[in-house]
Image (cartoon, rainbow, N blue to C red; front, side):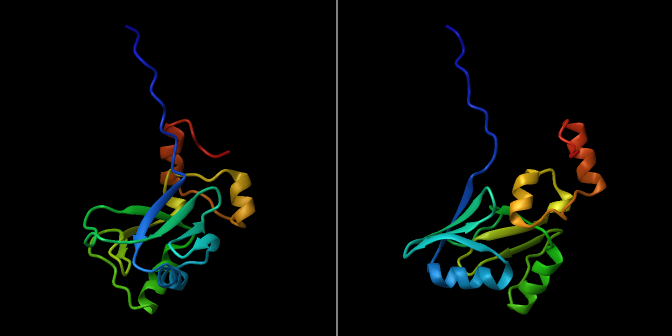
Length: 150
């Protein structure tokens, strides 16, 4: 019997976070990040990330995240660190810039320059982020995979 072909995982369209209140969640995240709202209803909101989005869904029922988290890529991690401090949000211990939102969702802030994840040039242009580039370590990792930017 021939082996069936498996689908190839190619990336993320969105990440969904459960929050207690949509308006409160949007106000909280607006204190930390500059973003465009893609859409909103009483039970959900969609924060635009160019060709991806962050979905906020009303109805958090579980306790705070411990190790479970996602890495949110930003253009300026230092600006996020300052915004967290200004908002009175504590960062979590460890080598990374992690924090919990008011509903217990754990986010790790990652600088675009330091990771393999790469937005297509047309997406960066549409987002007004053509100034972003990769550091030497990220370029080395991308080169090893045959994915170095031109």
